[in-house]
Image (cartoon, rainbow, N blue to C red; front, side):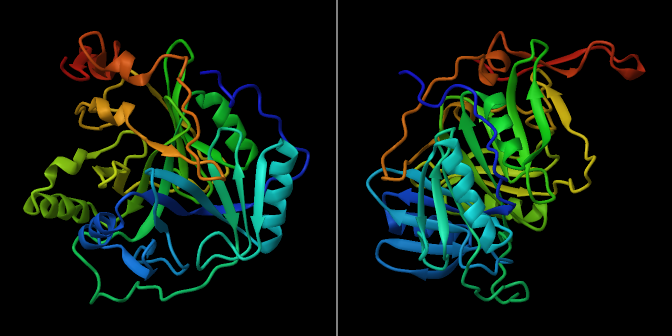
Length: 365
């Protein structure tokens, strides 16, 4: 299929909207009852309100109406990656910015979801449905509701992760939008496989993973401590749904965070995440990882399962139709690191202390 999301992305002459943070994801799910059991009964997200077609959920420390919207629909997909901006004027800025880019733009003064007011949704140059808003309905922040706090409590929405065929193209677009790069993965040929990008003062609000896209790789929620993540694993084991644990628990090299990846009833991937680091200084250095360093994705050198590289969720256009998925033309991270030919190193040649070079298979074939 020809790529409708190709070519250089110009830098608009008007200012980019001042984005505060990733704020919520709207997911389309095919069975609302099964999804409620996963996100509420298993993960413990808190219901702000719900009806027969939609559930609005928030994490423990959130005071805006929701971090996650589950909407019943015929095709499982991501309908909106929503960012909060700094003021109402920044919603105007978002509209002007994307109109100059030539993107499809829709604005609703009443908002696209309950609890969120004047909003702009766009089909961005990478093919993703982005939303920008400021006006929100405040709800009870549950920070001191320890009577509701569970052993695996999810406290904050941390980030999105987006699959896109051309990471440098997406990186330049997001940098123009005001994002900064905290970490990336490259090889000696100059191929970029992934980039982590932030607005708030953590490792990322979104990440770009190189692959067939546009697709949603995952949404991530933070916990206070890593023992909260272990409790989720124990709970899934007790419920005999450990097959929905895709990867982890473990610690990332990139971001340094402790992680777990699990799959909801539709196959949407959710990361549970904790203990990354502060990135707020203006001279915060970018950390670059070699794609063959087997500690980049898992600090302990454990293999990444192939599904983590290949599976992801569709994304929708503003009419609710799935965007076409375009194949990545450059080398894939899985192809160069997984399998009999995919040797990765623990210690590169010439490592300090005179240690010999160490190798570990990315995965068995």
